[in-house]
Length: 348
Image (cartoon, rainbow, N blue to C red; front, side, top):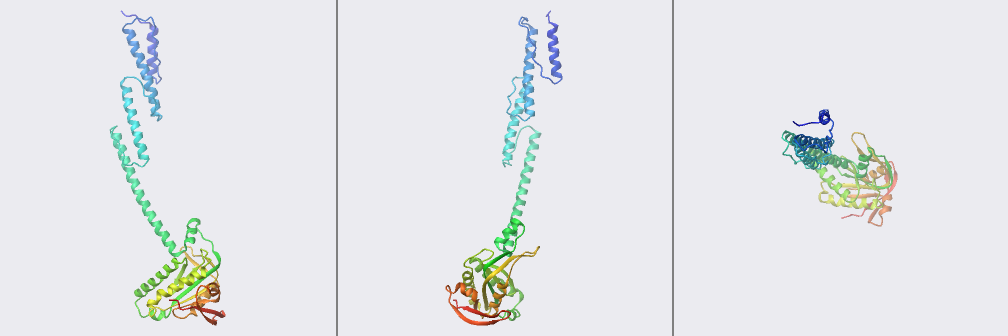
């Protein structure tokens, strides 16, 4: 009959109690003089189990904390082998998740049963959600670009940018500006003889061409009122050659109108001086200009002849060496007294 020391039995009892109460048991010390029999063999197996369990417990603690690179537990017991498979799967899952986080929403996993199915459904939902977000962003971007384009249609680029970045735009004074006024001679009579739709189409074609001319020369169309067209040069972007640039644009306007001058004769007036410019309105923005320079330019246009460009003395002094002029002498101007005026000499 095998003889077993009670203290040896107590040691194993204590270790199994530790095991059952959540603590990691230490191996039981086997006496060196213990016979090499079935008891010693059993004790060796149990100690080996304790060692493999300790390695497994430490590995499980690491994986529960997300440390997937922790040392793989040693041993051949079933739970250790299962852990190795779990660790490999989790590492692969981590790799896939990192790929997804980097934008690879077509990634999927094909292991771990129902978890894989749930994970792949989640990835699919993310892919669909991101696609929907991208589509909404595309629509928002298109609407934003459309709004900005509309804003640039009613405001100078510099003012529009200030309004976008600051939410407001302060009025500014400009000392050196040239103002152009034009209108269609006999517009009231002509408009009564054609259909409204045709009238609007004709005005749109004329003013669109004028806008192209102004944009090409760095001038700014301020507004149209009926058949009247108002443009400036030298604001809101300063231009040292504002007068010469505006007269050049006016000459091009006349050349554009010569092909249908019999139907739509035009008068142009130009004056140079100081102006104030700023946004008017809160809900419907309008960039407008103010100052006596506007009134004088309007008078120059009123006192012009059909298919002629009439300039004030102030503008003439700025461009007299760049163009030929016909001096008109002193002309009586309503609200201004007499003013010296000049026709740009028959530009063709």
